[in-house]
Image (cartoon, rainbow, N blue to C red; front, side):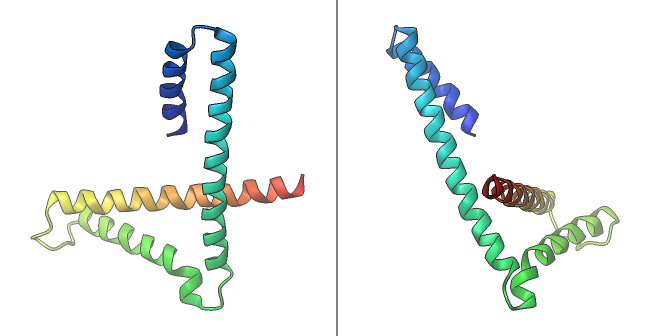
Length: 122
């Protein structure tokens, strides 16, 4: 997402500023701001995941993995033919999208958590 926004703004800056040096300086500032905003978002997501993972309740620590496993199970059951007959293809695809988003969020969250640990150590 950041790359797409950066590319779009870069094209606008190139058209608005014929001076290449000034255009490059502005593009660098835009990229820096976008990266900073993305880092803040990752920090916030990491804090949420860390707070849940360190919670006192088993349910608080594990609700995300349990939810994802449930959706994965529903998809596997569908592929094995063990599903409700009235479950439409759109509903099945929606479940798959939930799993993709959830797994993507988990991977990003774990990556952000590891990046923050490495950043704090340096």
